[in-house]
Image (cartoon, rainbow, N blue to C red; front, side):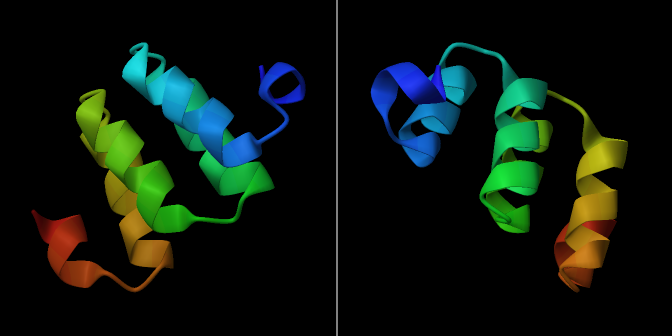
Length: 66
């Protein structure tokens, strides 16, 4: 997807909008190194425990607790 669009961030956004939250989060985390966006994708997908881990790694403890 990123190769087709030529933009990793846009590709992650398309994945997120299409309901592929885990895949979008992986792209944000592994390729773009954006832990906040990755965690937001996981929250949107209902993957709260995984999101909390990313928030803790990014020292966003209030969001991790929520």
